[in-house]
Length: 297
Image (cartoon, rainbow, N blue to C red; front, side, top):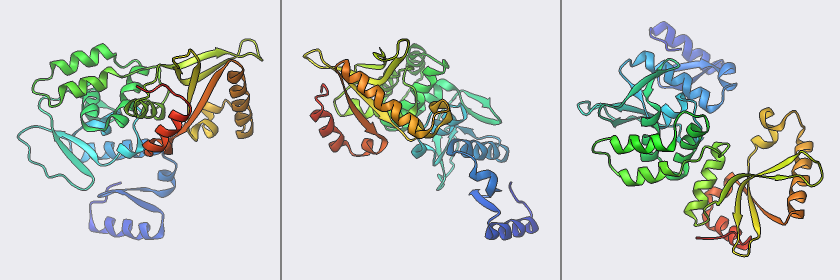
């Protein structure tokens, strides 16, 4: 909701004080009960659709466009909002909005908002974000079949006068659609930056206790002596997201995880577990990986 008239503004201000309405962006408000049910990505989509009606010439780019395209994107990259403008425009960056000069950027309409095309969005993500965060939208676009590595590389080579072309190209070339979610994409990028590049992703091992069942690990390395070590990136979703728990309780998920690790151990596969907080403490994570004898470049 965007109040225009003084009477509307006063009513909204009163309801904000009462707690029925929340201010979600400059000049934009939403019902608190409804807003609280939305995840951060869906909240941003609501804001971008509203701003598109307000600013018809705006085209969203970077992380903002990635979210509208339905791609994985770290919550840390959702703000500020990114808007593409032409070279002749001179808008001032605002606290919550950042403008980028993108000449002749391809745009498309997605769910009520004008955004850069999927290929341009991925190039801009690789250009604007640290590699750790850029890999999530790139991997998810590949996983969803929205593009290929070859198409991304051809596209970036065709953009005239692009800064840091080789660095952007290197980031795009590392995309892997087999990675299952944004957290794993971030983890894979951090591991590579620390010198522990993942040898294989999403590797399956037949279960020794239940015929027909397989155990899949997020990452797998092979040491020089031929022994294997699996890397597992654990997030809260694994225990509470219905799409990932298959109707199991948290206790059942934990028990299944224990049985899985025991089965892999019987196969001679060692295991190192990583959590999202570990990605923010590179030195400690590198020490743990070294102690686990993960192959280092």
